[in-house]
Image (cartoon, rainbow, N blue to C red; front, top):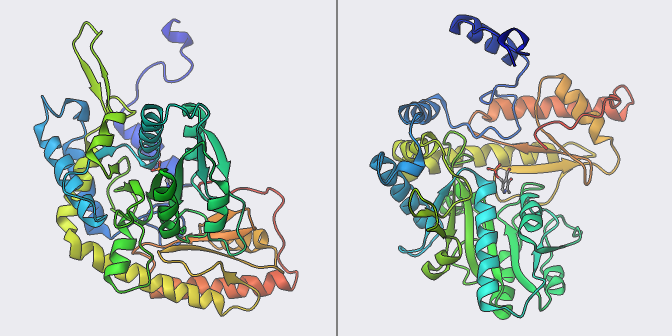
Length: 421
Ligand SMILES: Cc1ncc(COP(=O)(O)O)c(C=O)c1O
């Protein structure tokens, strides 16, 4: 193709022009730190965001793949963030932690380990199955497809929380893995991991606890003496956990970890090839080259906040969550689904059109996720959602509910899915 036919940007532009273009384009975006953003923002204050960003920028040109040769500083970040995560999840000092690009990669790796282990230790299972709760993150379904596992998906329970009796029933002699969320994204209610752990031990099934959201929430909620069911390696049946630094660990996006209970299981994660002319190729992740910025950012935030800093921010966010849950439950006709343990939850109504409620709240500048089953709104809180924001939202919601009930507001026809999903 010759330059004059080049479809976009045949000649370059100045940074000033490009920046103006970016700023113009972003005008329609919701800023992640916005107080009206009740979708997933994971903001912990401008000071924390500054530390996360600066550390990221220092390593923006570095490749994690070259940490053993070019960037040994990155190895240190991986080791020390790994130590923090082990302590948070009550893991043994020697259990393998792998830093990944995000929750989805961590989940994928856990599934790969479970499948390889089953192949090695249970060769009689030729059509392996994985039991997923109704609310399990869909990446497990995607990975099952890629890894050749049959998904046995649990039905929706009556109280939105997965039912241990359904789990028991779904187990067959082909089941190699089960997944429980702590908590899952929909409803924010922790799955019955204690019971699942017992079943996992009884049937020798790999149990993964998906703590991508809860990994930096539940340990602090527990330390604050709130009612949190045990969800981590204290449960003997839990063999792997995923935990995201880029969610409530407040790092810049692109950083998660997968943690295995037993050192021996790491062999099922590793890949090695010695047929390449450039030399041996060893890898324990799905990704190849990846930016060192995210893990540097996770390490920097961890050092900036320390355990107590995370705890204080979580205490504040949990207090706001309690306030919002109570305010929503006080509005006639709508109710929060169950009693969430963390800082996100959903609410709905058997009598009101929740899509209309959501549309009108969006019209007033609030951003959230719309859930389909049942039609409901999902809110996820962070540090910017203080008491004043909570009261403003609850006031708007009460007003919108009245207007929807009176038929003064109806859903718009363009049925958009708000939020991310
Ligand atoms: C419960 C849960 N697990 C895993 C993930 C995947 O995380 P990521 O988006 O970092 O890949 C998400 C994402 O929202 C999630 O909510």
